[in-house]
Amino acid sequence: MIPWEEIQFKEEIGKGNFGTVNKGYWTKTHEYVACKKITNTKDINDKQSTAFMNELKMHVKLNLCNNIIRFLGVTKDNTNHKYYLIMEFANNGDLYTYIRQKHHFLNWNKRLNLALQIANGLSVLHSEEIIHRDLHDKNILIHNDEAKIADLGHARNDNMETHVHSNLFGATPFLAPELLNNSNNFRNLPYCKQTDIYSLGFLFWELASGRRPALIQLIVKGLSPLSSPLAALMYSCDEAQIYVIMAMIIKL
Image (cartoon, rainbow, N blue to C red; front, top):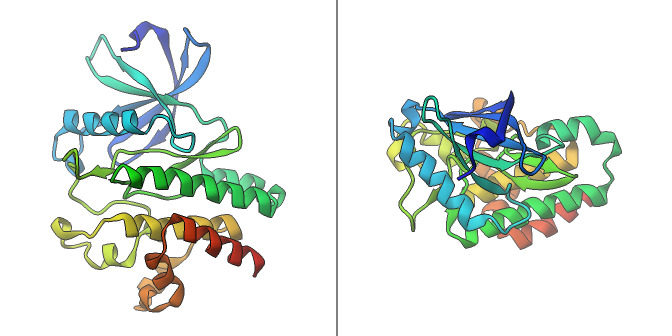
């Protein structure tokens, strides 16, 4: 447990479906940190403490991977008795912002390295039987120009039985079409490793093109993304094979 008085809270730097993140300064280590508080929402069925423990357990299992944001500890507000996850602070922001700021300065080797780093992080998640379920460009953080997967708030580990979310969530351009087609049937949403891989493929698209994918336009027009050979290829590949696809995209 990190003593509350050691953390100096600063501005809010992020807000998700059920959590807020503030930048903080850890006086003991003289480093900036990210401080995440779980907020109570309908999405987690008022199981705030369960959601907090869910994310905490997963971070503990994954803390040795350089491509997943590091968990540093827990602190408790002595006034309102709220708990905060203290995480590694990413000094280059999220991938969405990073690409737009540096798109014209990123050579292909750098883009490929970022792709490999993201794929490595996801591979470690999947090796622990953890499905991220919310993989998109604002949940990939860049620290010292290295990519790190963040925000395990929606992740699921069947082995630990800690999943508490029931609704559709995620950034629409990165969602697999099966999820969108079943959005009215929350209890049977087919989140799985393959839907993570689908999101990974569109992260690679954004890295290569500098633009967010426009998959939603296909769905609105009534077209089926699954009818394309590229979509079928994404579902049949593991992380290592995706590397080859990325290299092919770069050569186009």
